[in-house]
Image (cartoon, rainbow over all chains, first blue to last red; front, side):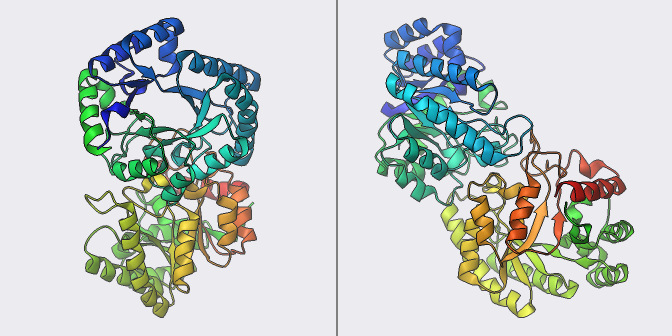
Length: 270
Length: 270
């Protein structure tokens, strides 16, 4: 039901088989208008080369992955890395950079302290993003990642940060991370005007890995069209990114097949 | 820091190695005053035999596991099974029966319909529980189980049900399921007077299974004493149950060692 004109392919979906150059060629061949590139893939190709290839292929980079990781080490090194990520996003002409906070610092069990640490580092980063004309797309990740990846677990938690920080921040909504939330509908409505990205995949039953076992849209239990309708109603008209971490299935398949199936499922079930 | 006088051993922690009779003997030997028994273990021993052995050993059954599963099949069969579960809980003289709703019905992607189905079936069950003098301890389970086990994911969601249904309902708080919640402190405060059970274990990093990879208290990242303090402040003075699903570690160990370590960790880190 979603229009292919909004399809963005996140490079992580193809990461084991294709370089960024191959992703750009492949998406161009399949008429996919956007790519959400990961920074390691951009670095591998070289930033200027990536910019040129995107331009030549007529493909727009949308959400770059990723910034943040505020809780994971030396604050100065993290700040500098995040500034580089923002510079790259601006150079690519992408709309936003997906920002995840990190989990608990090594050895810590104090989740509130980790939240405060991330909030402070984020606040320090926002003026830099604003000056670069880049939106930090803050992404709540599934609560099962709270320990080691993201101490932002809900839409409301991230919107509270957006309320505080204003321009330069927005929210990235990924159906995989938010579908279970009893405040889902109210949360998405509250996000109106601040949705910086929308990501799709599916929740499989069973799920055999807390990170690398996402499903293709339609292969799980998420009512994706219902969530898309909420996101539409909140006024979001931007790209919809297919982001599938799948060590056991999609990462092993021929990328041509992955793109073909993703396009079918995108029009049929997103 | 927790007092051993409040320790309850959930039989699931020992389930691969010990029958209920062995759990009762073992806990008596270790001076553990409560057991949270699973119904399959009670059935295996026979209800009357179980009642007699608990009494003879001077051990009190606390939270029975479990009732609910409202979304998982034929409503009449489920209702009848839940009534039997309540009758058994009353016969055992236990305080409550832990109640989990089930996930999405087979083939469904409508989580709101599943929630409504569970709420209706629960409402029908409450008068029966009340008449039996048994509290249904409604347990929010971790959001990673929303698809296949529990469409109740947060404290607030369960307390809304308790608000609606009143006497005969309460909440079971398990640190594993709730530790990530940004509303944790407010949620536990709101639960005051309605906490029917408190369960402990730990969240390991990495977690390699969404159900069967819980850690022993102290082996993960949950600040258990901080949560216990919140539960204490909310006025709960009942048993604290050690409930560890651990297919790869604790289920393989000698139950004597499991009890010994659980007692140490209970006094040191709960």
